[in-house]
Length: 89
Image (cartoon, rainbow, N blue to C red; front, side, top):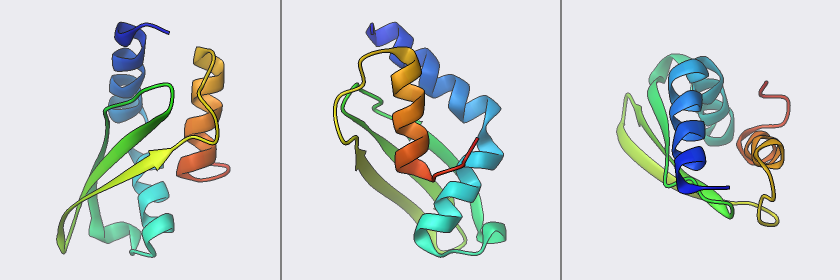
């Protein structure tokens, strides 16, 4: 995977899957969904991703590491879904 592909993947997730990202953050932080204002994936690599969000109590960041490096774009999507929240989309 190229850096451009990784950047486009993060941009796609941020723009097209905001509702799913908000639900994932709400679930893994035990925060009411209505308190999660916005989420973005940053620093996406084959090994993991940083997720940043703004909630009613301020800004937050968490680094998520994949169980193993992603080997393809499909694998990247599967690993993102697994780490963010099973059944996210």
